[in-house]
Length: 399
Image (cartoon, rainbow, N blue to C red; front, top):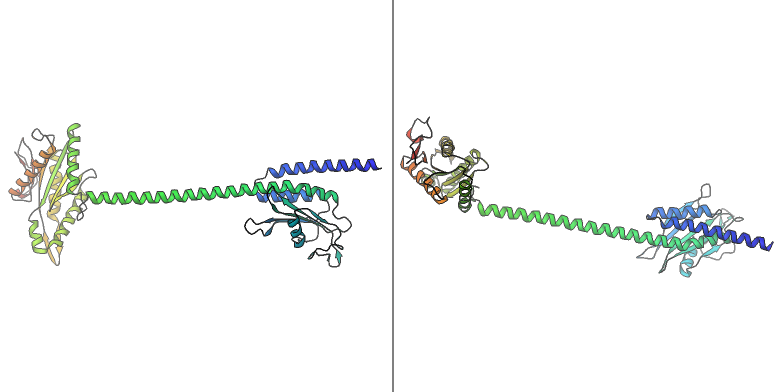
């Protein structure tokens, strides 16, 4: 009889160890806390036949206060979910060892309920979740049956389960902490990258505005004299190197001083802005229009012959001539004189000479009575605007 009992004990112990090994393997494969807690409770309900309800309580890292992270009730049993004797839990946490109460009538733990509606309560097992460095919390299970409460095998199983469960919880908590840290770090990196991009964009926009201010005339919005001189040299070199055409217009408003003297400089500014808008509406995006000085405007026309440039100049002259200006109840109109020069030409061998020829053509246009387009042409004398009815509206080539 004694041998049979010993064999049964060995078999039971072997079975329990095998079960613990299977459960431990399953727990260590979990990386999600919720999934891990569910597996622990499923294992308890599966292997503790008399278990009616159970819960896992974990200590907060900052306050050490125990918080219930999961609780379960076996299907069909009384609803005592969440009923945990705090004094038992406190004692287990303090002594760091498992506690099983199988006779509630004799239990002296304060706060432990011995009856519900006149019926005696069953058994309780509370096991600490002990890691290498601390107690993470407890596993708390209940059996409402007085006759079939928990036994030593149940205590043996849950006691063996406590340590690997604690390690699995510890590992998962560390994994969660690392994941949150990585997410926080990634978020911080993204925020820094976003701020860097925003700052870089702001700096680029600021540099762009500064660059625009450095090359743009503040009144008209056209390019300034410095930018024009650089563009003239660069475009001239390109035209000569690749044997392409390049034309230059120099435009001057006729009797502009009279506008300032009669109506004031604000009115003169209005005229210059209107002329700038006219140019922007008539020229190509590749053309360069700049305020050369005072009321003089310079226009570079890449890939444009002398004859085509003269047509563009005549178009600008006509548009300005037809334009009517209003200032403080007074209406007036203006005309302009335009000088044209272009390469390739045998007598123009540098960009400065091109500028000189355009300036000379402008001077001849004013000499001829203003409101003219004069194109420098060393070969022949011809009119650009063949349909003009007045000599003041003709483009005359300079020898």
